Length: 202
Image (cartoon, rainbow, N blue to C red; front, side):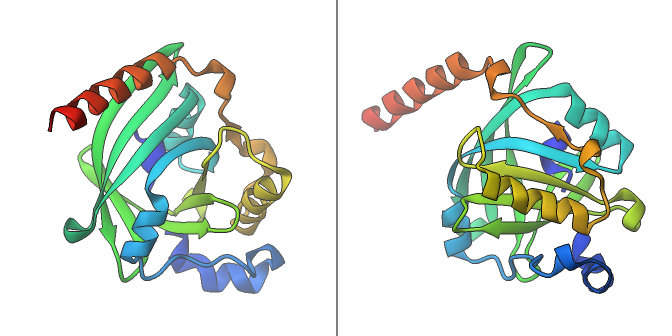
């Protein structure tokens, strides 16, 4: 699914910093180190997003709930992703690979016959991260927001809203997920049991 990797606000930051006070704390993670990849390891929940790009906006509105797991491959500069999305009251599971470009702090994934890039923005204290994307200038900017729990605090949400304001998107344009609509729990449990048996067998 395209949404989670509507993967660069980076090129717009000098302009945005000069225009908006909300951008003062907006910085990308560069370089991405092994420690960064380790911090990203584990389970994350998709909280919400806002995109000016119609294709990604449409994808966002289809997702009722979503969560995923990151597994780092340091030597390969990759993250293995196990992705669970609830769409139209059905669970869709996908396993894919994220490419890490360490020096400039970007991540990418191949989808729809092209490579999608995003800048990594994270707050280690708040246990959240965002992926900031831009296509052909400010008219197509977008941000997706993730946390280690399905519900975020007011402090975490404010961080997301500040970034939204920074890139010139209105709060009314945000699409949020609803963890109560998740139907992927049983499949996740099945996969975890299978992984446990494989580990015990090895």
